[in-house]
Image 1 (cartoon, one colour):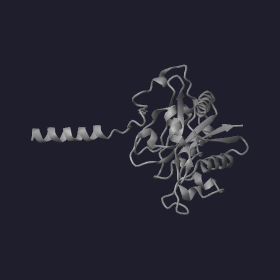
Image 2: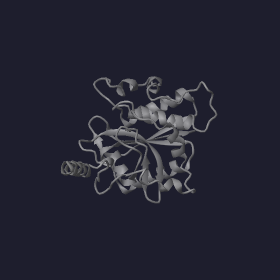
Image 3: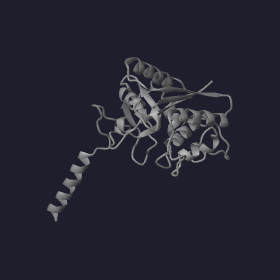
Image 4: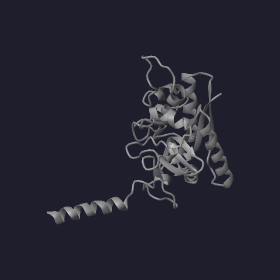
Length: 250
């Protein structure tokens, strides 16, 4: 019996070792927040976005609803974090938020049924959803910028880093990424177009904390900014190139 148990445990360990949760892609491997939280233990790092987003960190409620979870987190962080609220006020919910958007069938695209034989949103639709949702809750006070990551040039990387550094410094803005998740996690079978918020940017180590809303499988993780740019630049038949949007006050 001891021999059998030892054999079974060894087999389980071998399987686990062969399929790590975060696999290397082009030499880069994501690092979980639970394994490295040093950035947040430095008092010089204000990490405004992380502390605004983390109280409202929610999972996508199905395999297609990453955009709804991401935008709901962003709106809660911008509109509700740190604010005195009445007892009757609810948090902004990923399930009900798509009802606020009328410009396209966001509700259908993030449902199990889909819309016009499609699921999920493009980068342009992500920006439109965020813009309409913000306008429905706080008219005239917010704007949404969009940047498509169609190239991986040094200039594109520098521009991305500047946006990340600015986003980390400013209190009232949130960045959402539209990227190929498998390029960062190493999950087989991709590309998997995905959306999640940026929780923080460590400019000294050139890495981004992604608050991945795919919480059935992942926890927050750090990824090299070059790898994230690569993941955003992936083009798929259904979604085109990824990129990022920034929700900010006017």
